[in-house]
Length: 121
Image (cartoon, rainbow, N blue to C red; front, side, top):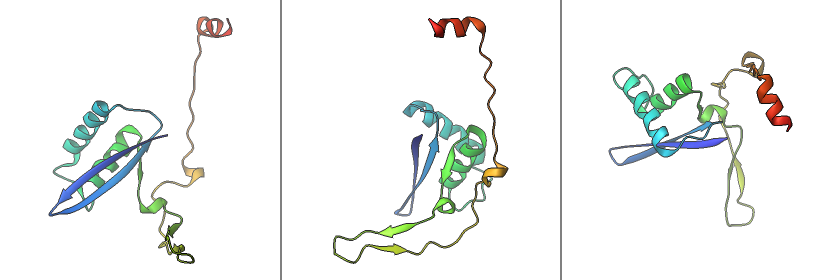
């Protein structure tokens, strides 16, 4: 799993979004995907921020996983002081990703006999 980050800064407020993908993209490839997604959503997004819209577009078109608060199951406030490392309540949210039984995927791999012989040698 590879992780990617988007940043946006408006009026001195800096925010970021994390994305994950099972494929590795170099910086230039990822930039091209982001520019394509940005162009697709720029004039019509309904999310709270442009980076959220771009993240959702990348999820729809290129299989990225947008890591947002809907996936958050536990949060812990870590402190250097003894006894102050505690669980921070996480608001229950409906997951934005389908349940496992709703998100079944298959992959068919057709191996040519010549390729199989090459691997066996």
